[in-house]
Image (tube, rainbow, N blue to C red):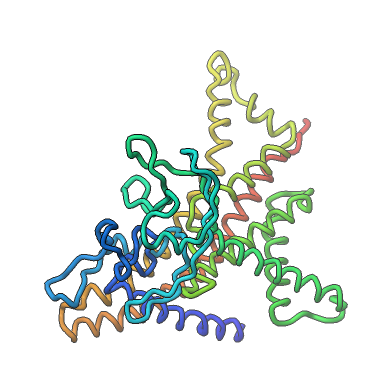
Length: 389
């Protein structure tokens, strides 16, 4: 326990300060700190390419730029075609990522670095600044309309997903390797292996066994994978520096896929009693014919269960990121209120930021726990036993 507390503080305090340091670059270039390629960087904008980023608004002082809160908040949590590392003296250090697109206008298949999009259009593709497709790659179609090509690019979230999946494989295979080389009956694991054993035992005994029932072993691999996948991605999303900081579980596309896995596990492997309760439940006949009221409600329930899983995970993780960024923004929103006020709010932002990061660590675990528990409950409900009188 002492080691865990030390690790928490080693991650949380530098992480909170790193958020403030990261946001410092936003004071001058708010959208560019995590600009998501909504437009070229202001310091590299050519004369023949549109206006500077809307997030950069001149203030009364020529040396200051007002902070656009919408762009600041959503610029940090949305996906992008580059991975921003830091801002040094107004210069953005980023990792360009591969763009993989197939044109819908006959322009063919293209693979190139996102760095080419900094200066505007490249090979007929550009980053949209419209409200309909902000920050997305588009091409110009007939009558000058924006058309989205087939986009298979390795974006920040995709790369983060690959890194975290590789890290999870490394942890799990490393744990399995320890058990192959040691006698677990006579030798207790320690360190990371001990933590993994504790978590696996907790999820297996407290969630999967109790919620699924007798044939719980059939679903253990999926449910354990879901728990550790969500937990690790939640933790990595809190870390504000590379290779952390990607908002993976705060992306609704990721939570949708996770919810669909649970949906298929429920409905593909549900037994005949489960489907009987849905299509012909044990209720008075007038609730089933001539108007199939109860069957309709049960069928709707098939889709509301995964929908709730998807929205709950997405909304909680996204809200946590936005709250932390909002706390950090107090430092810059109070910059014009004087040194005393700004210093006071800066101290409050640091303290509250550390507290919020600690809370986010708890939320990271709870959301993985809740998703796994509800998935196990839904799977258990799909395998009812037939009771005979």
